[in-house]
Amino acid sequence: MKSLGDMLLNTGPFSEIVLGNTALARAMIESGTEVVASYPGSPTPEIGAALMSVPKERRPYYFEFSTNEKVATEVACGASLNGHPSCVFFKSVGLNVAADSFVQLSLLELGGGLVAILGDDPGANSSQNEQDNRHIARLAYIPVLEPASPAEAYAFYLEAMKLSRKRKMPVILRMTTHVCHGKEKVAFAGWTPRPIGTVPAFDSSAGPSIPLTSRALDMKRRAIARLAEVAQEIDGSPLHELRKGNDPSKGIITAGLPFRSLVDVLEDAAEKPDILKLGVVHPLPKGLVADFLRSHASVKVLEELDDVLEREIKALAFDLGIRTVVVGKTGPEDWIGEYTPDKVAEVLAKTWPSLVPRKSAERASSLAPRPPQMCPGCGHRSAFHAVKQALSKKDITVADIGCHTLGFFPPYNMGEVLLSMGHSTGTAAGLSLFNTTRKVVAFLGDSTFFHAGLPGIVNAVFNNHNLVLVLMENGTTAMTGHQDHAGSGGNANGPAEAIPVRSVLEGLGVKSIREVDTYSQAKLIQMVREAVAEEGFSVVIARHPCMLKYTREQQRAPGYVRKSVNIDQEKCDKLHVCVESFACPSFQRDEEGRVVVSTELCIGDGSCIQTCPAKAIGVKKVQEGGGKA
Ligand SMILES: Cc1ncc(C[n+]2csc(CCOP(=O)(O)OP(=O)(O)O)c2C)c(N)n1
Image (cartoon, rainbow, N blue to C red; front, side, top):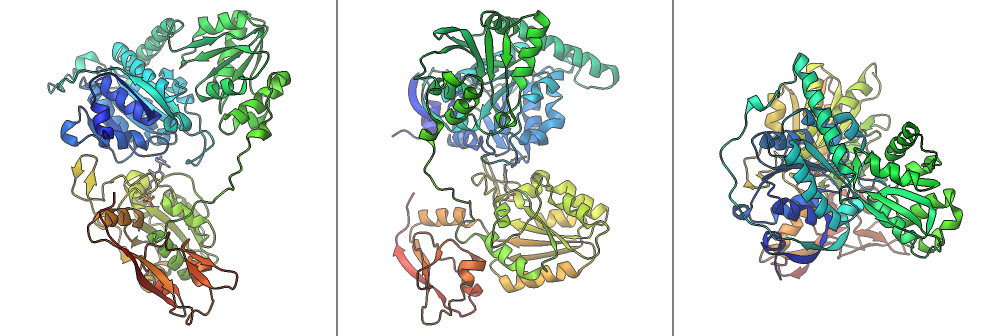
């Protein structure tokens, strides 16, 4: 079987069942995209995994995971200014981090072209909100293409890059979770490898590229003019699709994944309305939409999340005096969640009840909800178990984003407020003001430390805030699939010198720094107590490698011995600290109250041993034999 990397480099045409994210990686190669930058975040990190599956020496592109989305945008921008077709990709909320540079992109002359893939997350499957990034299109004068499937993701990327290069402007490819993660057979075209040009094409006279005083206005004029040119040509774009039904009085305008759900819902409908599926959602293809409105008595706008298309379509109908009834969102629930077939059936039934033949109930999932939890052996569990003992109940804890956010769940209950990546030190500083009775303790992961954590820390030093920061250092970006970060000792291109978090903290002027392995519970408890007792800003580095990553690496090594902990039932006092407070999922209680260990889950790390007051936990060998993939 061919490796993913070989498949991506295959120069001939072929068809394969792939993820939307993999289809995008192939589209980058076929389109001659030379520079790609990102910061990991669901639903897009598999694009990075696909790009990294090609051995570095064979990559017809440069790829990096940058320190954050803003830097990734800047890297792609700089490369495009130098003539390299470039791409930046990140998750929905990544746009908030990138925004300061992102909104400037359309003001520039992006000679190489630049496609920005935004991975929106309707349903907030793995995000702290479900923001609709189509709004940025108006703010930043950038066209938006929206595919509905992996095959379209591939085809639309190729179009996006073509458009971007032709107009020297950024183009957004808006993806959503199930377009990224859906699988489909995609027919790929061939491509011809060519060397990446090394003569820098940057020409400042092609600008202006410096938005100072009146130049910023000229640059804005140019951005608006370019967008107007795009608007002129997109009415006839092959990316739009018109599906004729058998009920000419009704029409539905939709785009992206809701289109797929709609087709599914209407499969058995006796009366099928005409469907206009938009491929370019900004600027609105006005001629196409106006013709569709004019030829139907009533039109439903079916869109996931916000009323972006609805507002524009209603404004267009008003401007042109079109008297078609346009129905968009009919209630607050229409703004929320993924437009799965169930949801589309529900939304559609509120406008046209006779149209929806299927009962949503028939499709209801029978899967029981399962709360997410930290892995067996996770150093964050040990950290929370210890920190909880070190704090008093009235202290305030501030969560951040990463695997450690799971400390919010019982029994740890650590982290009571969460805004965004890297917010914790800043929010904790605010909580500490005028607060003389409740110590504030913030948590922060190491990838996030470099991503957006540093300004909050600088602020805490600079303004002498009174709080404790527990830096949860596990040597990787665990939550999104173990990508390297500036402190991990590697990058997307191989080994790299790690930037030690301690040196950074010292360099920033943090005076009180303690470091401990989270498996050393007593020491960690002691250090947090000391830090809490101090006035001012203190940091406790609570370190332990991500055990999921570590165990996977160990399993591949020859001579690996699988271990598990075991309970000495004679010694066990049935206090159940292991089940109730430490709460490793490997422990379960049987009907008689005996603790049993799942050897399937347990990795034999032994972090639980010290938490047992009866000293009833030991480690045993389960199985020999490593070298497993
Ligand atoms: C702005 C933004 N970018 C990306 C993400 C996706 N994301 C969630 S947690 C995380 C980083 C986690 O790494 P780290 O801080 O080291 O904590 P760990 O998961 O390793 O414990 C990322 C990148 C996000 N939520 N927000």
